[in-house]
Image (cartoon, rainbow, N blue to C red; front, top):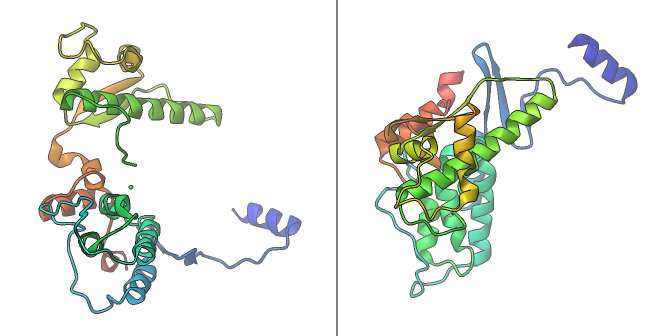
Length: 250
């Protein structure tokens, strides 16, 4: 590291600021247990900017019972103000992946938002599938195919930069039927309409490149980014993401 710093200082006009503590609104805490990042100051600035400095704290991003729709009969609010809140929350998700689901949810209503959506604001990657599916199994199978493509792409990039790994990539899934469908080449009555292009997942599974592993819904970390959860499960999955209370780090 010292040789690298010396070479950089020799060739470029630079200043050595020693350990990083703050970068682009992100606080960096270097600790013997590891390096931690947070946006505590930025979060406080958001609350102050939008008049919520003295609001009551919430221990969950959105209540499971809350349902949002277009609310065409609702009273409209300032869409610029609404978009500013969404943009601020999007940047906050850089260190708060537990806020991704609700931020993505409320960002759907940036055109003509109403009081209902603004209350939802008070109250990461996930996207809608581009095709209509007829069952949960089919939806999960298509999601697994997309995830497998991403995994193979990342693996090939790592191979090109010298990190060759011949091991099988494991993907956790909570749908047993989708896992069976990925391993069984037989055409079933309930699955024969699925686009043939998506069945490359079976080839990956057969060749030992991808393996779908069953994972209980309560252990599926990605659920925190795709749906509203009860507070107990929300906190459990947030801990599994590796997130810590600021006081635990210092």
